[in-house]
Image 1 (tube, rainbow, N blue to C red):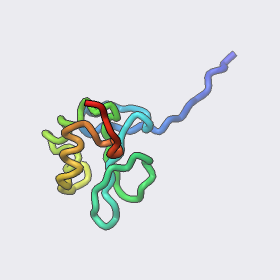
Image 2: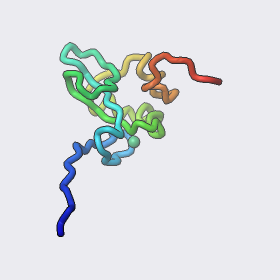
Image 3: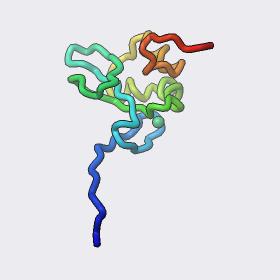
Amino acid sequence: MSAQRAVRLPLRTCVACRTTRPKGELVRIVRAPDGKVTLDPTGRAAGRGAYLCSDGACWPTAIKKSAIERALSVTLPPDIRSRLEQGQALAGGGSSGS
Ligand SMILES: [Zn+2]
């Protein structure tokens, strides 16, 4: 009667609040092999990744704590930084009503 399926979701830890969540609920920030830091919505980019909760609640915390910089040993580019501060890492430059 064990209909329980072992669902093996890849779990990752948010570098800001240290919450462990399924990978799909996190946003990946990746340091490419060439050292470039980008947001990686697909989670497939090559390089070393750091994860943040996708709801954006802890992104400003991540900035304040330099959590991403520490996790990836990089300096965050200003554009990524400001997007995280504003909670807009996932907005693809679309129009958001005021
Ligand atoms: Zn978080």
